[in-house]
Length: 193
Image (cartoon, rainbow, N blue to C red):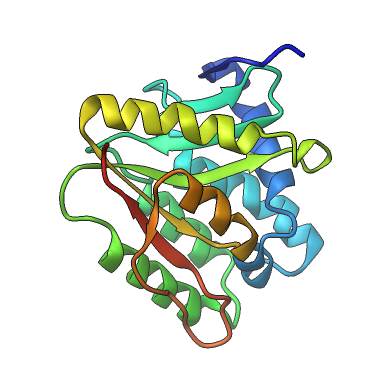
């Protein structure tokens, strides 16, 4: 069996990677709580993915399985999401969940390490290709880079199903994030080895 390589996504692949993440988050508890209507989800999630994690494309830190079966959209130390773009999307698409969503985002920022770190806003595998180890490959690739740089890594798990993957790769739970009717998110940190 050929083991696919993990590589940086090209700018030309940006739309495909965003589509892959959108597809992989179609049953994610937080994504679907905030966007329960299918049309709204499909209209907003690609834009959200781009402003939340797209800053990694230009830096070569949006990693993909070579056949685009999976993607991990990392932001390196000193680089964050496009917060203005995120707020614009929230304002344009406001509904009754906005106060709770804003509370979730504020809690996320409180858990985010104060020191420079690698941040994983989004990771996903094509649903028909899940269970083949692609998520683990993506996590090993990033963990090796963090270890080589002596850098902390941070993420928020929005799916209890993914917790085992993150724990296997050295992440530790820091607490919980939840507001009103939102699902629980688990902020997680990984120290270099």
